[in-house]
Every structure is written in C-alpha cells, then in structure tokens.
Length: 113
Length: 114
Image (cartoon, rainbow over all chains, first blue to last red; front, side):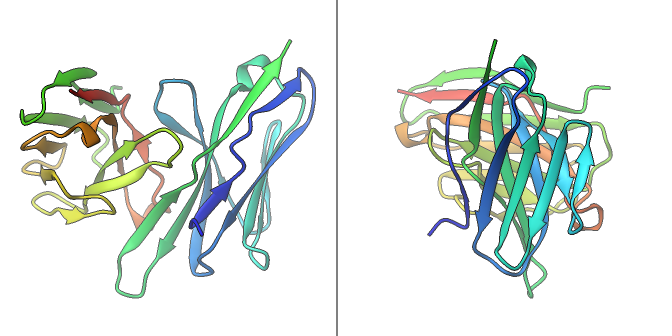
C-alpha cells in the first residue's frame, strides 16, 4: 500500500462547478499535511496547509480526518485557471528525529469552458 | 526575489557521462532537498541537507551524490549517468520542521540519459 494515495483523475468539470479531492495516508503518526498545486511542466507550489479544524482560503477548503486518515480539498466555483494537478503531501516526524515528506502522485483537474 | 533557482533547465547526457545540477536559494533556508519526479509516481526524495556542511540520504539515493558547501547552494551530482536517471529533478528549500516544513521548489531540470 502506498503511504499517500490519491485518485489520479482526471476530473473534468465545467466552470463554476464544485469539485472535491480526497487523499488517504497510511502512517497514523503523520503530523502535518499540505495541498500543493502543480501546473503542467512546472514546479509544485504550496496551495494551502491543512489544519486539524479545517481551513478555508477563498474558494478552497481543506479538511483533515485523523480517525480515518484522510485529507480533502474542496474547490468551489471552479475557474479555468484551476486546471492543474493537485498534490497531497504528508509530513511524518519519526522517533529518531528524522522526518519524511511524502507526496501523493497527484489528482489532475481540468476545468472546461 | 529569485527564490530557488536551478541550473541547467534541460540537459541530454549519454550513458556513463557525469554532470552536476546546481540549486541556489536566497531565502536563508536551512533545509534543502533534491527530488526526482517520474510519470505515475510522486516526487521522491534523493538526498537532503539540514544545514551547511551536512547531507543525508533520502528514499532513492543510489547513483547520486550531493554537497552543501555553502548554505545557499546544494549540488546534485551524477557520476555515471544511466537511462534510469532520465527524469525531472526538483530542488526545494525550507525552514524545516519548526516551520511545518513548507518547501519551496525550483523550476526543475529535465534530464534525458540516452
């Protein structure tokens, strides 16, 4: 089982639609969570951190469910410019002091005019 | 504000050739990382550094070496390139665990090994 799993998509949605992505993680000791956005042939860029109580940034809402070990990203009122791959990232801090920053393979979103 | 800068952006090598990828950051970050990204796989950590003069192995270190002689620079070397090292390489930097380890990425280097 992969440490971080995402549905690769693609999710094809019309402009103005609401779309949600989920990401599951296997390590219950994981401590911080992020969504990154990656445009085609570009570098990943931080979209938002994910907090335990859930957080919102404009049209984007992130949720964390520790009991079920998943995080979610909700995009409301989709824009053409939201078309990208969304990467789920989980950070786990080990007992030895090391940490791992694990990336999912990404979910591809295409917003259609 | 340049952020994280990688050079070169593209490179084609023949099997057995060597090369060095350079990463430079101007954000005074302690931590720096080298990843590779292959189709159908998430970014995988090759090596990382938690400060000037330190390096550590990541998930896929074989065939690569790194050096961090200056805080702002992190070099990735391929001593004898193999076709399996054809990939997109990303450098990243960040403040580490204390700042929730948010990482900032360079634009990437596309490497083909023939």
